[in-house]
Length: 83
Image 1 (cartoon, rainbow, N blue to C red):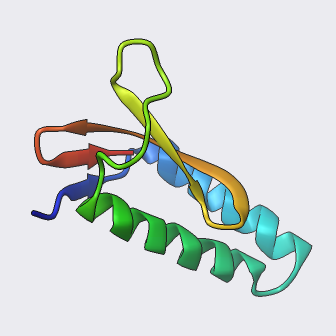
Image 2: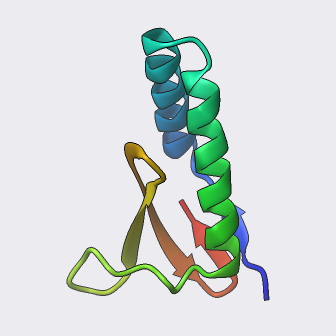
């Protein structure tokens, strides 16, 4: 079963900021960041319960984006992964 991935506006703004930062450091690095992010989101759509909780109420989870020091924080509600 695949889960739908929903990305909030705040997360989209963070993604854009990450892209801008990496692209300013080296041409093409922002694209590599987005590629790694897309790969991780694809994994989350298939296996959202694989990664551990980061809060005491067991609602929020996180996962790193490949080699980039960037975490995706998300919650699984029914069949939706909310980033």
